[in-house]
Every structure is written in C-alpha cells, then in structure tokens.
Image (tube, one colour):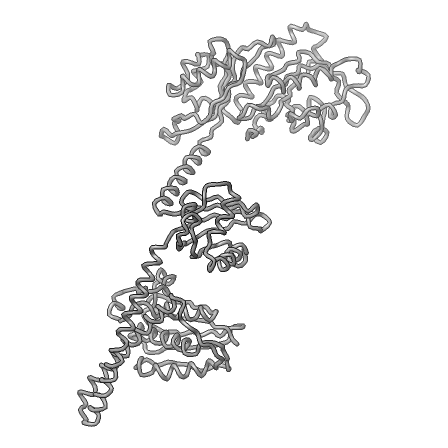
Length: 631
C-alpha cells in the first residue's frame, strides 16, 4: 500500500524536486515542482508520464562519457538498498527544448527513496543542485561544502513541510538532529529536545520498545517497523488515545556507513478503532446468535459454495466437510413435500425486482444422520454484484419444531373446544327462538326483549366459534374455497342489508359502481365485508357514518371501508392483521373481541391472490382497503 502523502507543501518549499516511479527501466516521471522546471529549463508537459532518460536524453556529442549510465545505476541502487544515493559532481547536459542543441551543465545529484508502511519503495525523489557556474572556479571540497549546506538547509525545509511525522537522529548516541512539528506532537515535546539523546526524549510508555528498534536499525543497517503503538496525546484540552505505525530507516554518509536513523510515524487511530469496533460488533453478534440458538449460513451463489456453522450443521444433519459437500447435503436434507416450494422461494429471492434479495420462510428438514424431522425458520439476505447478479447469500436458521408442535396442540384444542361448544349453542339458540315465539304469542313484551338480547349474544358466540374453527382449518390447510363467478356489487348490497340490524344506528353509504365480475368463494368474501363493516361500526362510537367504495383499479377490484372513529396508532398498523392481536386503549378496552377477525380477513384475501392493508390517523378514523383480481 503506497503512503497517502500530500506533496504540495513540500514542492513549494523551494528545492528542485522530481518524483519518479520505481518502475525500471523507465523510472517514469510522476511530478516536478516549479524549482525543478526552472533549473532544467523545462515545461511540465515535457516531463510528466515520460521515462526520465527520454525526457532528458544524453547529449549525442557527449556519448563517450558514462554519465547517463552513472545516473541510471544510482536509481537502481536506491531500489536495491532503499537508501539515499549521492552523485557529488555529474556532468549532464540539458536539452534546449524545440532544438537539437544541449546546454552544458554540472550537477550535484541526490536520489532518495520514499518508503510505504511495509518498507517498500513507493517513490524515488530526485533532487539536483546546478553547480555549473562554480565548477571551474572552486575545488571539489568547496563544492561538497556548498552542497552539504544546501542539503542541510533544504532538508530542514523538507522536514518542516513533510505531511507525516518525521525526525532524524545522528551519531552513535542517537541525538535528535531534526524533528518536525508533527513528530514533536507525537512525543509530546517542544523544540527544546533538539540535540538531546533519544533516550531522554521518548515517553516512558514506549521507550523500551522504540529504543530497541532504533538501536537495531543503527547496528544492522536495516529498516525496522512497529505497528499500532498506543500514545496519549494532548488534544482539545485533554489526553486522548492515538495509535501510530512507526518506520525506522538507517541514514548513511558518503562512505556508505550508518550515521543515524530516520524515524517516520503515520497516525492510524481511526483504523485501529475501526478494527476494535468491528471485533466488538462481531463478538456481540456471535453472542446474540448463540443466545438465540441460531444457526448461520453463508453461500457463494456464483460458485455454489455453502458454509454452515456448527448449529446449522446440527439442524440439517450436515457432517463437517468441504463447502461443496455442505451445499449438496443441504438440498438432500429438505423434506420432500417442501423441497419444490423452497426452491421456488429461493429463486424468487434471487430476482432483485421481485424480492430485493429478502428471504423469510418456514420449511421442514429431515436430519441426514438420525432422520429426525424438524421445522426450521430461515431468514436471509441476498447481495447482488455490480452486474446485478446474485453474489452472496447469508442468513440464519432457527429450529422452531417445539413451537410448531405447541401451535398444533393449541389449534387441535381450539378446534375440539369449538366443536364441543357448537352443539349446545345450536340447541340453546333453538330454545331461545322457541321461547321468543311463545312470548310473542302471549304478548309478553319484556320476555321478548330479554330473549332478543339473549339471541344476539348467542349469535355472537356462534360467530366467534366459527372464527376459531376457520382458524383451525386454515392453519391445518383445511379451509376450502368454493370458487365461482359472481357480480361484486350484488354481494356488497346483500352484505349491507344483512349487517344493518347489527350495526344500527350506523349508516353505510354506498353508491355502487360499474358491473364487476369476480371468481372466488362468494361466502368467504362476504365474510370479509361483514367483518370490516362490523369493525368500522364497533370502533366508531361517536360518528355514525361509514363509507363503502368499490372501483376498478387496473385488473383488480378495490374495496375501501372508511369510518370516522378512533383510528389506529401508526406503530400498531404493521401488526393489524396478526392473529390474536388487540391494541387496547381507554376507548377500546370494553369492546369485545379476540383479535382474530382481521387475521381471517387477511388470510381469505391472500387465498384469492389479493392484498389487504389499512390507512389510519389516530383519533381521526380508519380506511380499510383490499383488492381482488377481476375475472
């Protein structure tokens, strides 16, 4: 990974700089600052993206010298040693752009590497000093002194403007020669530490570890690194944790002997905290999964590979094996009666426009090891690649066999009790009706009124028991639809006439619509209308107007029933059609019901390939809507 370095401040600091890619034999030019363009009489377009020896070819008249080869070998040496290379005096003529002429030049050349966090050469920085004017006037020692002064001056400028924390130590006792503001912040020191030994500078928490690596770098001449060093920095008026990656690189003199150490530090606080948060989140997820007794699966859809954790393997009876065996065993473990349905649901999940990758299904498995049948609830999400094709499919599985068995026992009990109650209620209704007729003959008005109320209560009980029986049949797969064509407006008018007496004094407004023919179970759909109208009246205690509308909506008949009653809270709407769900308020706690009517309505509508939903504003009223396909 190449370091994320902003060179702008560095370029503007003054010295001529040319940045090269480490891509021999080209050493492609990446950047050049204004000072370099000026000293070489070049334009930026003459240089960028070109190999350096193409941008600055050797003077044909100077071909007998080996200056180009000497310069090229210096760059190779930087790559090999990852160390600075200096060419004290190099004669290298500069092309006069737009002509075939060259200008004679003498240079002091320095090439040094820029390393990334892994210690690899990310760039080569080439700098030069034009010493042509003094070459014939002063001795070599004078030039070297001039160059050293220049190097020290601009090295200080480089350190000051470097976008990373950087310091230079000199001598065997490792005294601080240079340190920029960023490094001083890391150490928690001021410029007073310049000239002091490193052992006197480092914070106690990291002293031993860092001094050891600096000493190893100085003694071996090899770079060393350490990662995620924890520091306490004074920031925003308090001590804050920060993390750094450190690079220690040997500094060599002209005799190629180690004379010091360069230290660079890059802050990685956000990366470290991100990793810690990710690990904590993974741990929380793992604990939650274990507590819920969930199994986890992860499928590579493109290659057909499936990975199951131990709990998932246990549920399906999959033996630990490679990912190919797990995918095969998963399909083999599916119950034969559910396999076709499950494959279809999975294919639908793989169609983004249809399901957007969401997957939620119950099915049965047969354990491949002990042949035990289980009920499984699986929830997952399919992720699509950039081409919109299925990529990764992950999710959880839950063994809900016990819950299913308890539901079956409960349904059996409800069905049994309902059947047992139906017979005496039928007899009771007959006795009440007989007594009503007797009372009417004898003109006993009080008895007739009391028996009328008793008859209404018996009817409510019969309706409730029929609802329980319908739920039992529905969940046992036994509710039968007797479908036939019928005209919908006619059914609506019949239902309105039937419920008038029940919902009195409420008034239903219905204007009728164009003739609409449906194919379905007329009685069951009538039951939906009856239930919705009864609910509208039941929950509209102070407003007596109920509006029923029916219209054609594309290929569906859309029916809406609107009341001006107490309404439904927004948080309750998603659970409105859930079985045994009642939302009690001060106004509803005395209203009779078991929370099964809307559940039955929803199941009947779904069985006709329709849909049902509600719109409501709490305190303002409710609009119940369902749609059914038109024949």
